[in-house]
Amino acid sequence: MKFAAFTTVAGSAGEATNSEEMVDNLRQQTILAEELGFEAIWLGEHHFGPYGVGDLPNPVLLGADLAARTSRIRIGQMANIAPHWHPIRLAEDLAILDNMSGGRLEVGFGRGIWPYEGPQFHPNADPRKDSENRELFQETVEIVREIWANEYFEYHGTNYSFPAEGTEFSHPKYPSNPAWQDGDKVTKLRVTPKPLQKPHPPLWMTVSTDRSVTTAAELGLKACYWQPPPLRIKQRMELYAQVRTERDGRPFSLGEDQAVMRSTYVASSMEEARRDAEEGIMSSFIFNDPFRGRQVFTNPDEELDPSVNLDWDFLEPRTLLVGSPEHVVERLQELQEVCHLDYLLVEFTHRGIPLGKTLKNLETFATKVMPRFVSGG
Image (cartoon, rainbow, N blue to C red; front, side, top):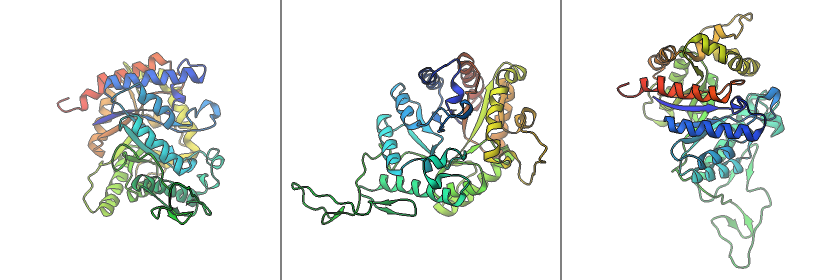
């Protein structure tokens, strides 16, 4: 099993009182994660910071800083919220980061879940406008791929059309080039650079519903699940494998090209873990509750009574990796047995936890849990 570290940065503040200190904390965490053998560091994307949540508007830019301070750990976004980005800028920035990092880039795409974010970037980025948001997401991903796959590209869709109508270019030193011109009229665009990894970096999508799982598989994107219990993950992994098998014309096994993210805190005992991490972990779940929908936390064919609270006692056995190393190992073994999981994103930072304890959480997981899931462990 491969293990990666994940953070939204808002939860990594520790004792930080300003953005400079938060970034420095993240640098320390990433350097330690590399030393401890984590596969990758994944960064979320959120904007506008209500209630102090959402302090990472640009995971690509911050990833460049982290890449310059490390040499082996892969640099990923889980996820770039595709409807928030101009597709050409997204393709350019990601390609630059892949080259700057020496080909260590992992690309994650998401549709966005918070209604106050999307409309600020594009009228159709509002997740409440489901069909428009999905179409914008798919167009953005398609354009990024087209740019990376071709020296010159054109695209004509509902939200974007490239080149823009009326684009012309001429230069006395260079004759018209039929590869991208018709006379002075520009018919295709040349976007550089291309990614270092060929044909492109690994591409992921965050998924929370059956429909999103199907979309990821149809687009050939790897899937990352945010928090579902093991039986729900298995059901969606089976759906993903079925659709990918039909798309790619070869059998996809359960768990292939898929990952799970889990809120994680490892301490000497469950009591200590709960005392340290409950408030921070629960603040994230409570804040996300209205947007993702409670189906995220249910098993197949299960319906939650409206009176059910998403409290610690409900969530811990379903979706959390918290407690002693032995307890966390048991939870991971369940995921491995039920879902054939082979890639885990460990959300190791939580609001209100000091930097020292955050680093200790990362170290304890790496030294007490990870070795149990390597060959011979």
